[in-house]
Image: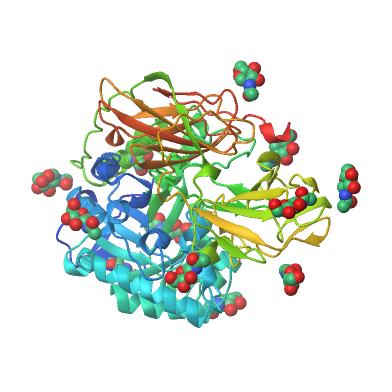
Length: 623
Ligand SMILES: *[C@@H]1O[C@H](CO)[C@@H](O)[C@H](O)[C@H]1NC(C)=O
Ligand SMILES: *[C@@H]1O[C@H](CO)[C@@H](O)[C@H](O)[C@H]1NC(C)=O
Ligand SMILES: *[C@@H]1O[C@H](CO)[C@@H](O)[C@H](O)[C@H]1NC(C)=O
Ligand SMILES: *[C@@H]1O[C@H](CO)[C@@H](O)[C@H](O)[C@H]1NC(C)=O
Ligand SMILES: *[C@@H]1O[C@H](CO)[C@@H](O)[C@H](O)[C@H]1NC(C)=O
Ligand SMILES: *[C@@H]1O[C@H](CO)[C@@H](O)[C@H](O)[C@H]1NC(C)=O
Ligand SMILES: *[C@@H]1O[C@H](CO)[C@@H](O)[C@H](O)[C@H]1NC(C)=O
Ligand SMILES: *[C@@H]1O[C@H](CO)[C@@H](O)[C@H](O)[C@H]1NC(C)=O
Ligand SMILES: *[C@@H]1O[C@H](CO)[C@@H](O)[C@H](O)[C@H]1NC(C)=O
Ligand SMILES: *[C@@H]1O[C@H](CO)[C@@H](O)[C@H](O)[C@H]1NC(C)=O
Ligand SMILES: *[C@@H]1O[C@H](CO)[C@@H](O)[C@H](O)[C@H]1NC(C)=O
Ligand SMILES: *[C@@H]1O[C@H](CO)[C@@H](O)[C@H](O)[C@H]1NC(C)=O
C-alpha cells in the first residue's frame, strides 16, 4: 500500500468538489484546482440519454457513490437537427444539467466532440452533413471544419457561464474522441485545438487508446494527452509514446470500462458483472491502484441511460452491429437509476481511499429507491396501416438517399410501378442500408437485413403494373470504425432486379418525428396485405412509478408512451423490455402507440413488469 499523497486540506477539495473554484490547471504530476492538487474521481453520464426530469436524481446518486466529477458527451445531432436550426430544450438543455451537477457538488468534464463515438448515431454527427458538398468528416476539410466551428461556437456560447473560469463546474474539455484509432491528421487535430481554445478557454485534453499508433495519431502538441482502457498499461503507454513535453501531465484513465454495451442479434445476452465476484474485485483493485497512484479516472459508464428515439449508433464488423435501445451497459447505476453490485463495490473502494487520506471524509448516503411497478397485460387495437397515411412524396427517375429527402432517422418508403415483366434478384442500391422490407402488391415477400454477415437475398418475379415497395430502415449510423465517412441511408446507387435498373420512384420519408396516427376513427382490421400497422391503447396505473414494458408476441418496431419515443424493439433481443420511467406516466389515461413493422396474430398485448429479463430469440424472418 502506497502512502497517501495529499494533505487533508487538499483532500477537502477532493471530497467536497469545487463549489466556487475559478481555476483548473495542471503541472507534470497533478491536476490543480484553484492551485491545490486534485484527483478526478469521475464517471460518464450523458444528459441526452436521460429524461431531464431525472437528472438531479442521477447526479445525486453519482455523488452518493463517491464521484466528484461527471464526464459527459454532447451529441451534436440532437442540438443542431438541421443545418439552420438549434434545439437546446428538454434533454438538450446541457446548461441546466451542468447547473444541477454543480448543485449536487460535482465537477464536469465536457466531451464535446464534434465526433464523440459514444455508441450514438454516427458518433454524434448530424445526418445532414452527408448532403454538404465536399464534406469529409474527421479531417482537415474546409466544409467539415466550418460546420464543426458553428456547432462548437454555439455550444460554447451557451455554456460560457458553466466554465470553471466563470465559477461554473466545467473544469476541462476533451477534443475529438480516440482520434488516433481512426486517423493521424495532425493538421485536423491542430485546427480543433485552436477552435476549442478560442471557444472554451479552459484546460483541454485528448483521450486515446493506450497504444503507440493511437497516441501518435491522437495526441496534439500543446494539449494534455490522456488514455483509456486498462490503467496500468495505458498510463505506461502514454509516457512511452508521447514525448512532446507540452502534452504531458497528470494521468487520467478517461474511460475505465465498468462493463460493455449490447447489440441487437448479437447472440450474447446482457452484459453485466452482477454475480461475477472476480470481475468486480478486478475493478476494485484497478481503481484502488489508480487512486493510490495519485492519478484520476472516469468510469465508462457510471450510468448509461437509454437510446430514446433513434439515437443508437452501430459498429461495423463485416455486418451492422446496431446498438440496442437500452444503454444500461451493466453500469454501476442501471438504466432505471438503481444501484447494482458493482455500484456498492466501487463505493466501498472510493470510501476506503477517502478515509485513508482524510479520517473524517464521508460520502452521502445511497437513497432508498421504490421497486418498479407492474402493469397487468392489456390489449392494444389496430388503428391504421402505415402505408395508408403516407406523407406527400417526392418523385424521381432514380432513387435518392434518405438524407437527400431531408430526412435523418426512421424509415423511407421507395415505391415503384413495374413497367414490364422482370425476374431476378433484387439489389436495393450498393448494399442494404440497413434493413429492407420488400413488398409486391402490398404483400411482404422478403427482408434484406445488414445485421447479418450474409443478408438474405430476395428473388422477384414481377409483372407490368405490379407495385414494388421497399421500406428501408436506418438502424443506426456507424459510430466506430473505418466506414464512418459514408453513412448515407436508404438507397444509395440504383435498384436493380436481375441486373436491370428500375426507373420511376416515389419516395416517402417516414421519420416518425410525429407519431403516426389515423386520420379517421373508422375501425380497422389488419390483413395480410396491410404492411406495417399502428396500434394504440390506453392504460391507468395505481401508483406512478418506473416499470419495464414488455411486448410479448410482437416482432419489430417502435413504441411511444404519452408522446415519448421509447425506442426500437426487436424480438431477437437481447433486449426484451423497455425502461418506462415513472416521470413519463400519470395515474389515468396513459396513451401508448406501437408501430409494428411485421404484424402477426400474436401482436395484441403489452404489460409492465418490475424485474426485466434479457434473452435472445431466433429471427422469425430467417425461419
Ligand atoms: C505539482 O504541484 C503539486 C502541488 O503544488 C506539487 O506538490 C508537485 O510537486 C508539483 N509537481 C511538479 C512536477 O511540479
Ligand atoms: C433550460 O432549463 C431551465 C430551467 O428549467 C429553463 O429556465 C430554460 O428555459 C431551459 N432552456 C431551454 C432552451 O429550454
Ligand atoms: C517519440 O519518440 C518515438 C521513438 O523515438 C518517435 O518515433 C516519435 O516520432 C516521437 N514522437 C514525437 C511526437 O516526437
Ligand atoms: C449468431 O448465431 C447464429 C447461429 O449460430 C449464427 O449464424 C450467427 O452468425 C451469429 N451471429 C453473430 C452476430 O455472431
Ligand atoms: C504511478 O504509477 C507509475 C507507473 O505507471 C509510476 O511510475 C509512478 O511512480 C506512480 N506514482 C505514484 C505516486 O505512485
Ligand atoms: C485503505 O487503507 C487500508 C489499510 O492500510 C488498506 O487495506 C486499504 O486497501 C486502503 N484502501 C484503499 C482504497 O486504498
Ligand atoms: C475533519 O473535519 C473538520 C471540520 O470540517 C476539519 O476541521 C478537520 O480538519 C478535519 N480533519 C481531517 C483529518 O480531515
Ligand atoms: C430539402 O431542403 C432544402 C432546403 O430547405 C430544399 O431546398 C429541398 O427542396 C428539400 N428537399 C426535399 C426533397 O424536400
Ligand atoms: C419470370 O418467371 C416466370 C415464372 O418463373 C415466368 O413465367 C416468366 O415468363 C418470367 N418472365 C420473364 C420476363 O422472364
Ligand atoms: C397497366 O395499367 C394500365 C393503366 O391502368 C393499363 O392500361 C394496362 O393495360 C395495364 N397493363 C397490364 C399488363 O395490366
Ligand atoms: C444508375 O443508373 C444511371 C442511369 O442508368 C446511371 O447513369 C448511373 O451510373 C447508375 N448508378 C450507379 C451507381 O450504378
Ligand atoms: C403465437 O404464439 C404462440 C404461443 O407462443 C405460438 O405457438 C405461435 O406460433 C405464435 N404465432 C405466431 C404467428 O407467431
